[in-house]
Length: 97
Image (tube, rainbow, N blue to C red; front, side, top):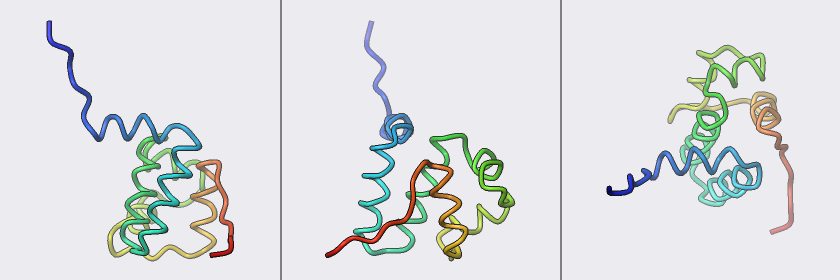
């Protein structure tokens, strides 16, 4: 019997359930410098940890608003970004270059 291969997406979703993996993934997206990459990464982390509905419940933000915030055209406010990161067990930080 042939072993079923795991898709990249399945492997990513499993990895993003780990806090250290979430940190590395989001930091890599930040270093890319493209806002859409960051928003996509946040959406991936949300999907791996209960989906957008779960995120809405944890952040007390409307599901529809989260979909808009994390879309390619999204532009979340700092307060919303903090709530999203907090729901992932993370917080914003500044470090020297």
